[in-house]
Image (tube, rainbow, N blue to C red; front, side, top):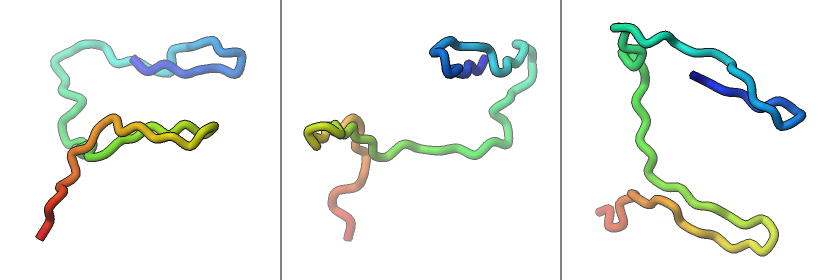
Length: 58
């Protein structure tokens, strides 16, 4: 199920898929998260949430 946020901060159902024997992940692109950080726009501080980048590449 996919939800969307309306302007009045309420949520509504955008779409959903019935649970059947169909594999919806088949033939879809696969993505891998390598790096993610959170940045505070007020004070400029940064916090690394996830880091899987190679440090020593030769």
